[in-house]
Length: 498
Image (cartoon, rainbow, N blue to C red):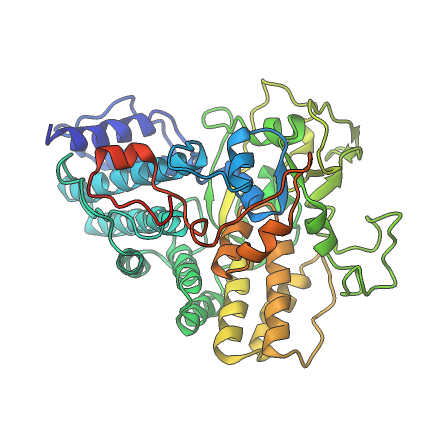
């Protein structure tokens, strides 16, 4: 029994390397043995691919768009579990997202620990070992950071453990964040300072560190780390917001810093175009549509350019590259008008555009998608810098420069922010810019929780059909630990009020 936990970790990693992604140039083997593995570079590469494959799950792929249901930017047309969560019906037995995030992150952590405990056995150069360890430490930090955002403090494992050893009380969130930052510092010191090529690089680790610091209110540190990414100059904004989220624009893209990668036919995504361009499982809310400015940089309440009879006109171009009306047709890359065969009426009158491939239309169950799901990108680093710098020192020119760079992206070309904003006014501008720039990327839920605005905003929302959204600040800032975990780990204390 004491060996079972380690054996499960090995078996799980073996399953994860049964097919190839863009991380390797050759197909991995079907199985590995901990006794006979780690004999050459090829096997080490297969093991590394197995760790990366842990992000090809619903916690890190296009399914994170469903988190924006919880954040209030979209409604779920299908999927009873996330609808119930959005209405405050979150319990330890909820399953779905509540248990899935927990399980998938710990599966990833197990794979990371397995790799780190075995890599030194391999007859490869110290340079390779250092680089690969850095990549895996980055991934472990990402798994733990995701856990802290949903559950707060969690059990902390930095090596493989037995079943008995795994039965521990959760560490404090502060202790877990300390470990996350230690992993990222080690990764930063180990990884090459180059552009992203499917493997984590120094900029990836710096970006994640800046994000962790921002989410934990460490403003000056977050601004300093994000500023390092900016000054290093290895990443930049891409000149096409629409294709940034499509396979056609993602190869060698200078903005992408980390992504869940897909490739037809070996590692195809079965979900995004089927779920969102055919099944219509999520519908953007009117509140999100209304938050996009007009092309003069003013809100729809202030701008003379806004025409209520045609909401599409004179709007921030990111709006129509993110959201469409349910009835709108689209044009594919060959200039052909494509219709939709939605199998569900939109509950809000809107459907998503971002990340959906019109060349895949008409979609059916044979459709396989290969657009990567972006986890970190340079625009978010600029937003992190702007927010952290404003909170720490106020709206100096560097804050304006970061935000205006995003607004001036070719094809977006929104006017610069007005001069003379106060710190509070700039905060609101930053929050607006985060919402529209990162819309439908699963970021909004995390944002409104860390800003402590979820408790006032979410209860103002009414879902199609009349159900009132609920958010209890005494409990809903965290998910409950899944009941299945409480049952097997008596040392785990349930989160408050569940």
